[in-house]
Length: 348
Ligand SMILES: Cc1ncc(COP(=O)(O)O)c(C=O)c1O
Image 1 (cartoon, rainbow, N blue to C red):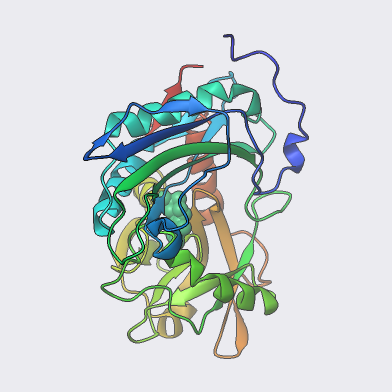
Image 2: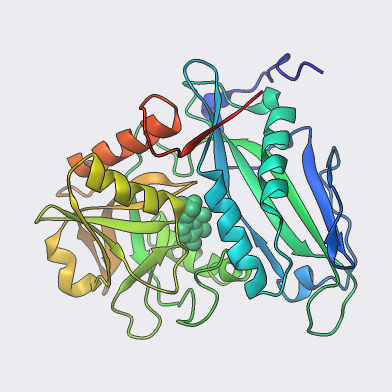
């Protein structure tokens, strides 16, 4: 099959961050202590037992990454090995079997290749979002791990997470809710972390913010992260800082940006506790970062009953975040030689 023919006739630049059904997904099953080989399938519906632990006890985890088309037509993934590593750190935390690295990475390659027609073209501002997931599917009413698991990878073409013409400047509102307990599952990518956040996001949006910002659950002082992204802050003394917390997801984007800030922008970087109220006046710029958010500068934050501007007008992008965005996206799109081995080409 020449998968390269018949690119879909979508309005790529109008895509939002929504599910679009593509042709193929990968599915493998773990039972009796081992994985089967798995295969590409067409059916997007998963039929599982009504007693499945994924449904009742949230025994499930997932990952998210993107494939991009470069100017010369290559299809590029950004550090997929780290998604594999993170899923295989998460799985044992909720008593699920790890997915063999080779299966994880090959499944991504295969699904991207098989859905070549759905990969947004270069210059459209859109990309192919890849969602690996692992769910406990066997029948199991009692509170114990599933006896059967499905590993699935599906893809969907997506546009920007925060809609805007250029680099989206967003706003955050500090949530009264906690996202994760200090020794809970906050640093693991489990679905259970997200259900509790739905209302926090809704409340933040009612205040006019793009997303909720969580502080640490113990003292409600230190920045943890946003609903679906980590936080980075450029301080007035020229450092790039990011929260040190056991309760946040170790973002692959954030880890990459910290390296770029040091290597390419010559900044001092530090992972440490950041006291929002005490340190706010030292913030020069801030951003939310993640696969979906990419790097979204934060113009203002709502806390203690009022908005606090980071950028003077709460809207203009600062030079550090603009530079970091350009570096990151340039690397992800294959325009900037990176020398780290971060970008993996899918042979379509
Ligand atoms: C809660 C949360 N934090 C941070 C991130 C960013 O992580 P990454 O950069 O690996 O996509 C995500 C998205 O995956 C997320 O859901």
